[in-house]
Image (cartoon, rainbow, N blue to C red; front, top):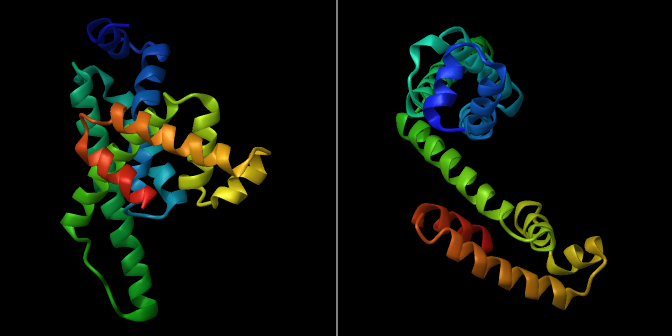
Length: 186
């Protein structure tokens, strides 16, 4: 559905339009939040951000505004949660670390890049996707991957090479995602 129709439906409270926006941004905002606070807390924070988005849906006229709102709301909630936890921890250890703004920017970029890589991996044939997921995201060796998939080790090696070739082509316009992919490989 085109952005203008989607935004109009979104502003009018159409749940299907909201689900479209949710599916578009949820994973990447979770990656971002999990880089600042623990993963369980991150999901709660992101869900709260989407509730705030729903409550203020009339204020948004494009997807970039929604994306910026979600990142900013999540960032602020993460910082508040982090500070609250540090105050609690201070009573236990008397040491409080400051959140480094550079780390927040790093996690924002990382979330966006991870989403690009995930989308690129989803474009691979299913057998290639399984090999990439097990090898690089689960950290299994070639032999462990072959055993798990019940294929030969040469099949795993061949599919990894072909997958990486395809991923390089898909991500050639995103040098940051390509660097992340190569860092997983090396």
